[in-house]
Length: 264
Length: 258
Ligand SMILES: Nc1ncnc2c1ncn2[C@@H]1O[C@H](COP(=O)(O)OP(=O)(O)OP(=O)(O)O)[C@@H](O)[C@H]1O
Ligand SMILES: [Mg+2]
Image (cartoon, rainbow over the protein chains, first blue to last red):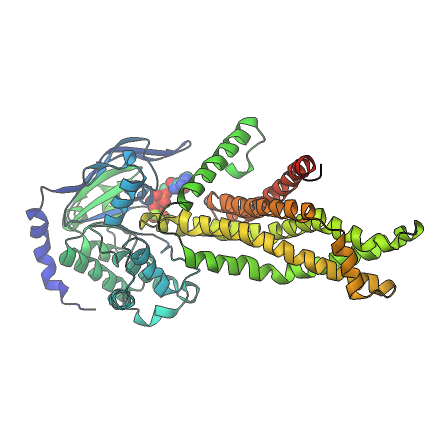
């Protein structure tokens, strides 16, 4: 993996600002409860094209629930949620499928198909969704993304033979292989060592630059937030309580916000 | 926990409604393009081949035991020569299909329930859905069709072995030639014995696949629900087999034996 990104990183916020007008995900007053458990109470946020939005928040605050609503795995109880100007809740099966092809989702658990090898895992979306069937094209793509996540040797392993962090990287590779326009990363670096974490963060940044991907990145990892985030939001009690760049939030007056940035 | 919901009529109707809905999406996805042929073959292998020895042994012993058990009683009536016919008719009409289906519901419905349940819990099914692939088509349609194919085949194979087992049983008591035994056993069989029984096993196979998939695919969050899915798949599939068998007997006695 190339690591010359440190200098280029500073250019990015301007790039985001350039495209500031185009909103790819628009969320307004989103509410979601499970029975009596109110998880999201009032979420409002926009994601702009080419932007990396980092979501910080304590465990169990409903971050995963929020991004699952974006791809229609869960439906909100009330509030607006549009992706590419389409109301997710009102899409039919085919429209939802088309939307999902444009949105990549990295599951917190990796969610590898454990009855398939790594190669089959990666080929699964290509052959099923993109309807690719040329062996050499598939191989080339699979190898390319595996290089990207730094695991070219894992290609014929079963998921059960991989470590937790390796699974996560394969999960990431499986999502990136479709080159989605929007990426939703659910804790991409949790459980990884610092070096791999940084590599993954830089990979996220590369995706943004190379393909103009717009991303929502849920993380607890401050370094990842710092490297990848153009804009950060802090989630608490089902609401976003603060928004700004890394530096702005780091120097926030709010106790709760500040407490996220205390380094151990 | 939600899974231990109290008995209530509304929950029964809700469950029935969900099953009908699941059936609907199975049918819709079966006739949609992009059929998963390779996966179907893999599932047929998994479901059929891997249950082969279990059903084979069951069939063989079933025939043998039935023969051995009925010889003393039949002797009292001086009707030992009817034993092969009696065993073959009862095995092929009733006992073979039901026993094999019940055994397969223990082996296959539970493993489908557990497999899909754990895929659900570990978000693999969600991941498939989110990537734009069709999990019903890939996971559910293939398994249900594979069961619907393989259970009848397994049953026919077990029936044949039961007849062989009957021969072995008859030979343990006294000598009877293989040819004579099979002549007697098969001469007593009619098309109306084999055909309805095979149709019945198609439904049994469907029930096993369908209930296994339904329970697994709709299991709750949390690892304990994998066990719940496997367990309730077996219980429900077995129940369905008994109920379907009751219906099949009524229908065949109206249409086939009259
Ligand atoms: N499908 C569901 N059904 C019922 N409750 C759910 C469901 N999904 C999530 N929840 C509940 O919603 C709450 C928030 O869960 P969520 O997974 O979004 O947290 P999170 O912010 O992602 O936490 P973490 O950082 O630990 O991943 C939890 O209390 C969880 O039990
Ligand atoms: Mg989460």
